[in-house]
Structures are given as structure tokens and as C-alpha cells.
Image (tube, rainbow, N blue to C red; front, side, top):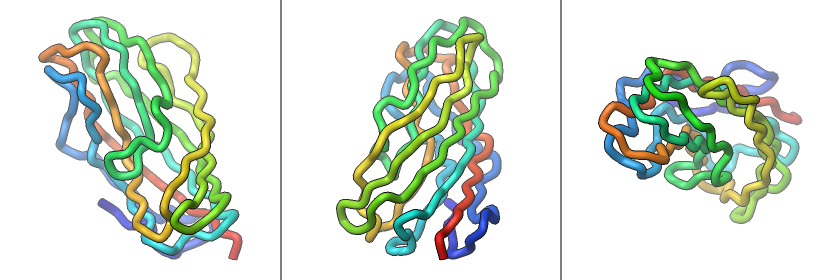
Length: 171
């Protein structure tokens, strides 16, 4: 897990490279990819913008739907951000989630506004993201990618590759 430090001005402030863990397989339970970046408690200000890109690889044998969410710890900030039909027999197909978070309010009932998109697993159009989430900004915020396969199959895998986060502040 990488910490998003107090750096400002669009510098890469947290980045996770490839992670060895894969999720999915014979399960339809939501799982984190494990390439999380942490925003330390109490460091956000109203007007801060956090941008990020999470990239992961999907392999399937069956034809499950794949639901992707940006999560704070184990809690999805928006459920679901996308549900994308996957093709049968995919092998290491790259999927990317781009997002932008604007801090609208801080404190125990802080508000984050999320916009972005999830690239398709197959040839479908991009899946847009737009929602607001209530988040306690006085506690650490741990951004990770949460994925859920709609159908259980032994060869369904989803492996996190990268998660890069940038923070832009108003200071």
C-alpha cells in the first residue's frame, strides 16, 4: 500500500506496480485487487482533486459479467461503477479504470464527487462513472479496485497491474 503524501501540483503521489494477487476464480464475492493507495487522515481540503488510473488483466473461460468499483478499504465508494459483459476465453485482457475525485466537504461526513470511466472488457462502449460518496476524511482513505465476477468459474481471474494516483491541491 502506498501513501498519498502532502505533495501537491499534480506530482505522482502514490503508485503501486504489479501485484501478484489475482481474484475471481470459483467465486462471485467482491474482492480487492490489492493495489491500494492511501490518503492519510485529515490531509484533504475542500477543492482538492485526486486523479487515478487502475489497470488490471482479466482472463475468463465462461462468459461472466464483471463489476468494477473504486473502493475505500472494503467498501465500494459507488456500487457498481460498471457491469461489463465479458467474452468467453479471454486471456490477460487489459481493463483500465480512470477516475477523478473532487473533495466537496471534509470531516466525519465528508463528500467526494467521483467522475471517470471504465474501459470495456469486450468491444462495448466505455462505461461512465458519476456519483457522490460520503466518506470520513478524518480517517485514512484507502483507494483500491474492487471486482466481482457475475458467474463463478475456475479460470476467471483478475490481476491488478498498476494503480497510479495524483493529487492536486488548492494551497
